Length: 375
Image (tube, rainbow, N blue to C red; front, side, top):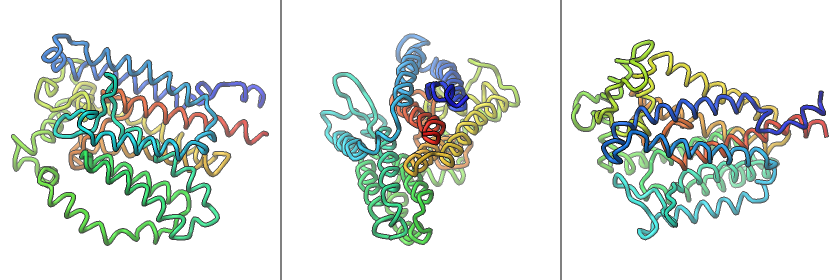
């Protein structure tokens, strides 16, 4: 029985990851088509533009997930610094107008040889692999402030400084949760983790209160009906989508909020369209699939055969989990508006490929339990 387990490829042995991911991607392709059809017809004179691209992204990302599931996860220990430097270089490249693509007032994309991608998405995975290596290597001194805490916060600060220029505050929040979550799992002292707390108030003042559009988002989150046609517009129409969906939804393609009412219905607010067209049943189905993934990630982290595997698996699980929490929280009006996609479902090639690559690495860590514990 043990020999049979060892011969199964990680891509197929970790079914608790493979099946939920494929189902979520399938739901994503269908909902991207439904949510983007009106926009697609207006801008590209076809209903299928975004659906076709998302389907292509899925095929490509599935191949990426197979490759990362095939590679022994320990190999990333040797390349973590190289991957980190590549991520920093890409974030710096975004600052050059000749290479970057500007959309919605932000420069977050690179355009090289006609291929457009978002370096911040790659940076999240690079940060996880670096922290997994660094935190596991320093286990003997992890309780030391200058060893277990400071170097990792410095790396996070470098990423945050480059990303805030774009600007992309939501990605910084995600990276911060990943960094502090992984340090907590690795055993960094709680008092070290909370030591930056006194800096949060002045930092929040300069990053939120002093930046008009972020302050408007906070105020609209607190009471969107104060300005229903401007700052509260997105949240109100998102809530209308959920409210009109009921238990079973209006049916795929029959939602109204995607008809040029709800901005970004196929990306940031695709969860709202799911609520309107698939109802409470569809929303719960999606959340249960995510829950299965997260529980599997926690199990892999707890039983990983090495500290590097355990910390990295924790980071990958936090990475998916925090994106789900923020995107669904924003759609339901529980969190201020952030431009974050819903993993595996929202339209977007870079985010889908990186998410699938992350799941492939998690698969390999999970499958290695059976092999490495018996060697």
